Length: 500
Ligand code: COA
Figure 1 (cartoon, rainbow, N blue to C red):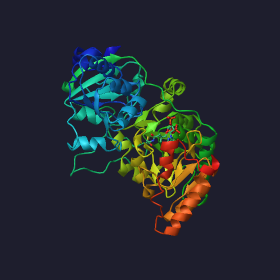
Figure 2 (spheres, rainbow, N blue to C red):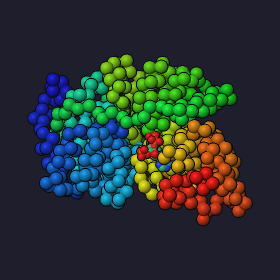
Figure 3 (tube, rainbow, N blue to C red):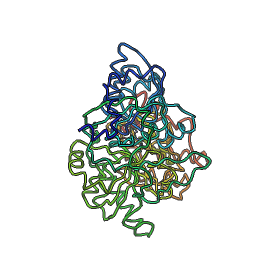
């Protein structure tokens, strides 16, 4: 019954159509919209906005938590609505528009966006468009499968449009922990001292008079599109398991490890699932996206608690999890992304961060975002929040991309998301390079030996030898350092001539 989902009777009068709500959005507005890696996104109003723009063109700045589902970014791009987009996306059509220079994309650390809003460096937000599982008697918003930036959008926006999604389980209520850092200079430490700390409200407290429209929807989140584990991701997981076992043997970790974070994408998801095969137990997660792998670890009896900002699942896993949600609910908390990704908390908890690189160089600088140094893939997301502050910052990738034509280990990355200073461990299916306490020349030997594919090892070693002959703390041949990428751009391959 709708009155169970909208428990403040006065708000029932605000129920309207997606078209009427979309008509409130005017040219030049700044919109904060819910949605984090396909979870908990607004599903009806943005599509009505795209439809309206066909006859009534307008442009907006769109800020979300992270990527959206339901092809919303594609539709908004095709409707030419997006003037500016931040802080993350993962849509092919939008990516192409960004790379043509048509949409100004601001690729931001996910923990930072609301700080910019709070301090008026960005904003003000005209409308927050938020998906909710329910509205409480006091008008508090109960988010659905993600919190992302929704809580701050709702608090900071001039007006709020809510999508009440009946397909989102009512049992989601109680899952969220909404905490806002105070304003500076009187801000106090964030009181999260363990993965399962609950420090805020189970709903977003707002002034209910700001709610101007409520749209009722009944559509599930888009399923995640991650690929199943393969031989390479199994090998990466195997190297990591052996590394963790070795750390335990050396007394640096125990078998419960430290709280784990795993980034988006097929590789990180597969690697985390692979930990179910290790000897570890009573694992905890302090992460941002809880993917299928989180629930694989729960079901394997390995994981005791997971803190995140969203739950993004494949169709089969969503049926399993939401079909039996009481089994998981008390072991999960969803937080605003500025808390799930907060440097202070990540450093305090000693998180082990596992994120995916597109490529890395022989000294350990990582490129996660720019193909060929120029073309945006998705964005840095939360990887930087975790990499800089983690107890162990781990990056994984396959040693080859594009059917073996591209090496993921290169002389110099043409774009740096994570500098050598933020990277402790690199893993490919070939092996693992432990870079801790090593100087650049020592790091290069480890990376080439353990991570590079045999097809490219000789060329990398040759580059490194000749660079060392020229000298330097971090030796390079600057005229040649990016030639591998130039060759990939012009010939579609980095494969050395002798092997072609
Ligand atoms: N050069 C060029 N392209 C490359 C490449 C390289 N060295 N390595 C991978 N790619 C391409 C793949 O071919 C694939 O292209 P396609 O989509 O056209 O098939 C694409 O990048 C994705 O690679 P894939 O191997 O499928 O990995 P993934 O799904 O695990 O994604 C990232 C990898 C890096 C794109 C993804 O993890 C990401 O966006 N990371 C940045 C954000 C982040 O880390 N957030 C973490 C906190 S949640």
